[in-house]
Length: 321
Image (cartoon, rainbow, N blue to C red; front, side):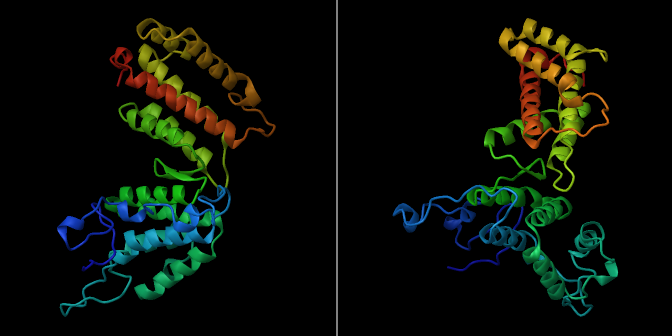
């Protein structure tokens, strides 16, 4: 059996020469069954959740995905004689390397290695010496600034391995964030996708996620503010009233979708919380003691509410685009 080079494409991470052995894009990246030692109880079936840490197995997996999806696709510039050189300048990775040096490493761009092999060696050395959060920063940066055609497969592959290695982090809407529940991820991503036609809602949710996920300077208070602002923005669209309030949209939902009074009261209380708790809606001078759990709870709840309103056939026709 002959294998093609291990590279990542928009359609497949691996491709066999024999047609009958073609597999789904990510199938070969997943361990299909529990190992013998795990079945025999000699080793645990899973490890403890990796939060604010990254072990060697996960680090190795993420580097392997970078190699398969990006680095193995290096293509050097033409040498003028029908062949190709091994330089960075003029290669398909020149723009990405400039972005990494200028915006990520914040090093002078004239320190980029001339030859790709040396450049890759420096990337690898940095990656395997980096702190856990620097690894995630780098992976996120490459996904954001690398080939758009490879982004979806790369993110999907990363999430498979983050789950397999029991990491507390996932890619959500292109950002690595601390969310361990698949339902939470789905609620947030669905809300952002569903709000595409509604710029204000999408902007508030995306900003809330970015503020919460900032690993160097998270801003939980303003993340919560952005989450509830997404709901308020949607309320104004549903009511077709720029002065519309959450109370108004809840009344509309109660009338058109027979919203249960208990659910109405729950969202009303949530809104009241943001007005009163820890100065979220007011520019207090003292430091907020809100936590990531508070910000995540509010983002998930508000995302679920946005999904509930937009997906509701009775109210969708009232949303002003």
